[in-house]
Image 1 (tube, rainbow, N blue to C red):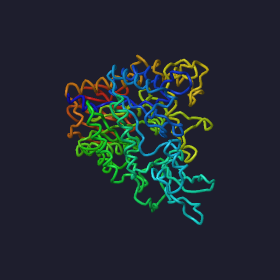
Image 2: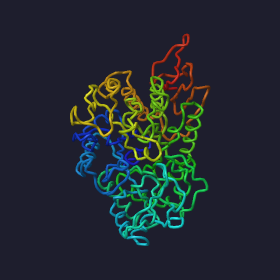
Image 3: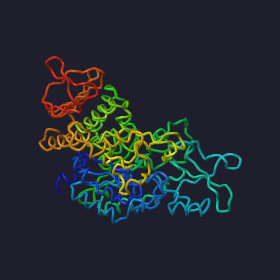
Image 4: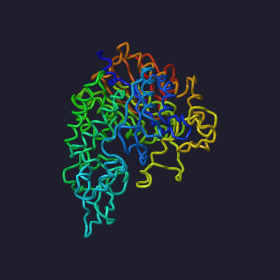
Length: 536
């Protein structure tokens, strides 16, 4: 077995596909696996190493697939197991690996085991698979504890018992349609171990583990001292995540992954402070954990330096390379997050070049290579379950991406033709602008974000291949002067001007920049909101 086959993930660029919004092959307005397969050439043309698919397993879609009712099948909305096999086969033909999303913290309220628990009643073995508990108060009318849901509101819902009376409550750290598994019950591990093996046996090259820091809850489910937690932030509930027992699960899953040839990869969504997240990537646990620091950091050199330096130092300690990300399906798209308009786009382009130049691996979210902004989805069209409970919506980052410039209603997303309505509306008032951001419109334009992405990935691959860039190089140095952030390592320099005035371009051979350079007298200058990659 070659080292490359078992360590590709250490410097990989992984393209995240949100299947609902990527490509709709059957014309029903919802993206599907056949649609993904039909567009894999686009991902390969970028130079990506792998594709991560967010959930496509059977689900009532209360949280768009993160509420799984059958871990071992494809939801008909997205196709069939045969469609998955075809996707994997085509991806492998193109040199792309495939990561599947696994959701072990919770399931769907439609899962047969949860339905059996509802029917069985209090004190039953079926209910022991979940977190059922009597309520507090005179007649059990209050939740068992004061935990909030990540989506807003209480983390408990009361059931109607088989006799028709109000009864016990069940825990759901997310939506009521997503009851949490009781991971202290031995059968839970058996069930999810089977799910892991199923997709790896089916050809998946690894899994991304949703809410990987969740799973176990503090024994006895005690009250929180301060239940006032910001929505969408599970780590604020210290009783509901990051329990010590979770590490034994990942030690077991690592043994399962390592038994395959080539070895499969485990990537965790571990949204914790870096020193706690580092514990999940010990040599016998997960291969990687997402680095969320840059997702939360403002466009500020000091904030980025602090985040990047901390992550790089942590990587040197753990031996697990940083997994850089500035966009995903849960956050506002970077051009909008960084201020919107031309300046927001310039900053997003600089951020994209930065994560592709930094040592380690990087995740690119679909549409990021097009510079797509956040879409203001009309209130009546919003579908995010968090919207109704907390007023937070993630729909704006999940709008179907444009493939063609012509205003057909879906810009090539759906095979259903001009009359097909996508599951989330694409922009209408700025139809021409949305079309101008499409893949076909940007193709071949050297100033486009699409061609910048391709150029950056070609450069990244060439530098890795000739030994100039070493993903695990502990000699990485982050320095900052005013608004200029520099990361120097192994003969290359990444420079990002995060200030408001142009600065002199550092010495070196310019390899690529996220935007045009300017002049300061006889010298080249790096404008504000621009990144450059140089050879020293």
